Image 1 (tube, rainbow, N blue to C red):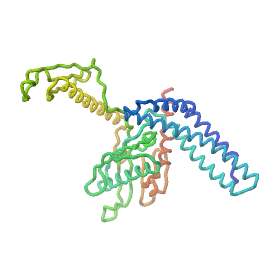
Image 2: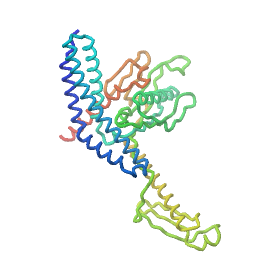
Image 3: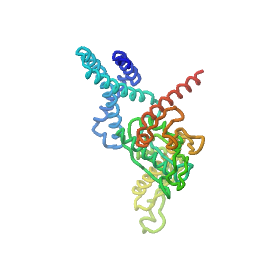
Image 4: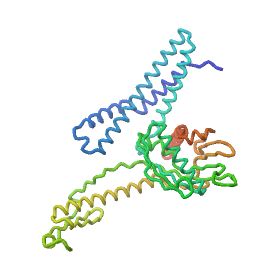
Length: 376
């Protein structure tokens, strides 16, 4: 076995660190940290809890990046000192410890490098993932549930907050579909490479003849589109008409101009309100209803945008991006990147970081090639 080259390994780690620090722009991160700290210290920050949450989350993420970069630099310096000490004292245990630490540093730098490749418009955001069973009957429904568990375990392993938002159970076993949200910096950037059709090959546990079954499930990943629960409606965008209310309510309602009709000019939405006794009350109630309808409209537009981002994902033969084979051999293989492993149980237990990292590198290369072709 060749002797481990400590000098080269440390030089490689230091060069990799410099590349990452340049790509992430440490000075920019520190400026961003200062700006967010000022914003987080404003007295009225929590008057808008949603905005406050966004500010504090961004600040925490930026501080974590800065701390991680600083820690990597310190660890490289410390391991270099450890190697020198081990060589001076001819201490094999110290050198073995240094070699282990160099391996850990290299792995951490590789993970940080992945973040520099997530430069898409929405990559920094949280992710909403929907899994749907496809061709394959009850086996496909069971496979969809296996994938749901896999991703939730992945989030748990990485310390990411995940919340199941909706589940539609199949009649016999498994799920027809499920939607969950992962709240973490760059959750969309990581999980977006998981979007596509997944294929499972195994001996069906639902076939009393023990035959091999191929089934499919579709994974759709979209970014969490940011929106507030309050919609500002400028006076210039509405027309307000008042009129006498009709129906029961007594003389005061029917003889005064208490009823209100508000027309939102940009969308044509019309809201009328006459239940309250005063014009002021009816106008306030009508505005609340108008804001709610505009919020629904915004959500519908966001859903349309999400659908465009997710694309048209099918779950059948010829469309798969990853195969999970449990019979006649054990293998999980990504058909885009070529990354594969025989540790199928570990994968279904959430150990998919290497698949995700390979996918991010593949996507970055695809973007680079597309940019070069566009420039030609």
